[in-house]
Length: 261
Image (cartoon, rainbow, N blue to C red):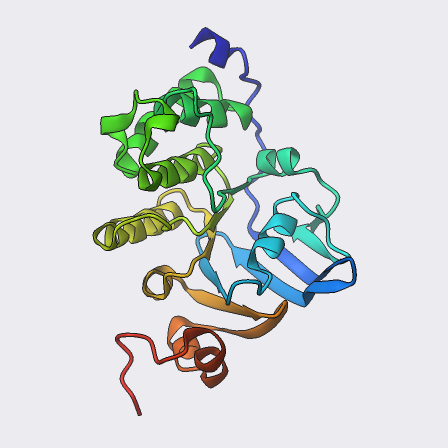
């Protein structure tokens, strides 16, 4: 614990941001267009879904929002501040956290230590880090594996640890990249409740990137649909699941629970 505690620094007293926006974002790779003039905004206490076929540009947009990549054109704004050039680790301290499709953990540390390290890296004191770890272990139903090393976790539990590490930074905004991958269908309702708790209790804005459409419509206030790097549609869950172009391009059929006519 002493080695972990030494990583702590003063708590950031910043005012929580209210809005994270991608403004006219374009990204090309060797002439190939990954994103073209995409706008997206996430407010505090809001859950926004991001869906689209493989290769639509979802992960590229998340990487740009979180500072892991730079746009070819366009800006990223946190409230009125242009943060396009801000490095990824500094965006964490500004209140922007993320998960990855393949959870990134310290595999030689315990589940609890993983969460504490994330909190400390975002400026929490050792006491705050320990308290956040306790709360997140309960929230994500990880208490029974708290002392296990991360490398010993089943895939679904490791995904939940990735979410816990992101939430440990006490973010204003958290971007969840396919967090339900590897979860059993029976675990989806409980995970949906976690997302609602992040919004309602932690008062964070959430961007949820998911292939599980049932989860998306359960928890999202708005859904943003990408196709071939461009915005295909933006709307409420009801609007999106009845949008003919979305059904044709992404869903293939009318999703379950939607009556015809």
